[in-house]
Each structure stands twice: as structure tokens, then as C-alpha cells.
Length: 278
Image 1: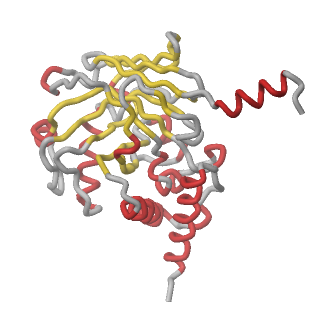
Image 2: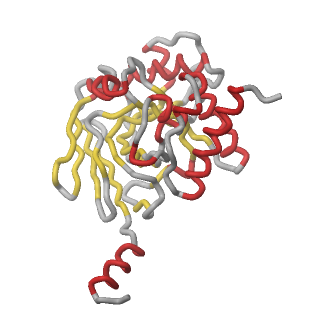
């Protein structure tokens, strides 16, 4: 016999999976679940469904690393989601229109691991030894929930509002970086739309990665060699629109770019309206 928890978690997972499949935002799921454990149970349901469909996990993302966003949602801890291979976009490539629901973008430091992180409590030395290199990244977050009407349980259940991500292509060793002080500039067609430093990400991007490593061990899914970790935003998130071109530059890591395709159907509709077509 199904329990109330099974019913609520299952209903929330089905709602989010339908939104993902149809690319149609849905109502919030917070009224269906109770607390963070159930929110992560929903996320696990999504992950199992996507694995069964053939999607390949390639790492994790950390969200809610900004104190300002934490205050907004009334929390004092980050959250996490799973990265899949079909979420990765080559540097400078274009994201198809509609591929990410209600997209927003933020610049981040990405770490790529060469060793597993399986200890109950990790040290900075453990993380430094486990990291092969760092890369600049743009994360394009998206929400399956209509109008970004989210609380913490909503975004956790929704795979931490994951969308797509872009990595730069110049690997840099951590020994050659000062990630706490590295400056970030995110531009839209040459205009600055977000700035920040590594200190905006839990005071240091490695602090965020340590939190993730310890948390995933408790969940029974430790970080593994080869995983990519998006450590969290270095500055304010920006809303994107079809036709945008974003470029992020992070001191010591270089730059990374992404474009957003125009919605051809919307353009055609606008042309017809301007021409008086019925």
C-alpha cells in the first residue's frame, strides 16, 4: 500500500517530468511534498527516470551559494543537482530556442575531478589533490515551474533548477589560481550585466565544493573521478532572451561564451502580424 510520502513524491516527480518532456512550465510542487528530504526524494525520482531513458550523468551543480539568494529563500545552506551529458554546450555554441525553460545565466568556476571524494569529511587538501583542473563556466539555469514561483523545496525537487552549461576550453591547475579573489565579468553583447569575485560563492568556490563532497557522501552518491562540478555563481544571475550572446571572463581562467537562438516561430508570427496576415 502506497504511503502519503510515496503519493506526494510521486505526484511531484510526475508533474516535473511532464513539464520537462513537454517544455511547458508547471505549477509549484511544494504543496505535494514536506521538507527537504522529500524534495531530494523527488529529485532522485527524476534522476532514475532520466537514467532509464539513457541520459548519462557527468557531474553535479551547486546552487544557492549566494548569501543574498539564501536570505531570499530563508535558508542557510546550498543545494545540489545532477549534470547530464546532454546539458553540456560547446564553448561559443548556440542553445536552441526552448531548450531551457525560462532561462537565466550566471558565471561560475567549474572543477573537473581526477580522484574520487569518498570521505565522510573532506579537507581542502583532499579537494586539491582530487581536482585535475578548473575551467570558466556559464550555467544556464531554468525552471520547470511557472514564472519561477519557487521556494527551496521546489528548486531542489526540480534538479536544483538545472538547465544547460558551457565550459571554457583552457584547463588551469588550482595551484596557479587564487579563486577567492578572481574577478568575474559577464557581458551581453559587450555590455556588462553581472560582476563579482570568487568570494561571492560561499566565500570561496572550494568551500562550496567541500560542502558538496561531504553532502553527497551522506546521500550515498559520492563525487567520482571524471565528474564536473559547477561550484556556484560568482555574481548576480541575469535573465536571457532569444538572440542574446553572453561572454564570461574570469581572472586566471579565461573566457567562455554562449548564444541563444532566436525563436523562428515567434519571428514568423511577428512578420505575419506586421504584414496584416490573418
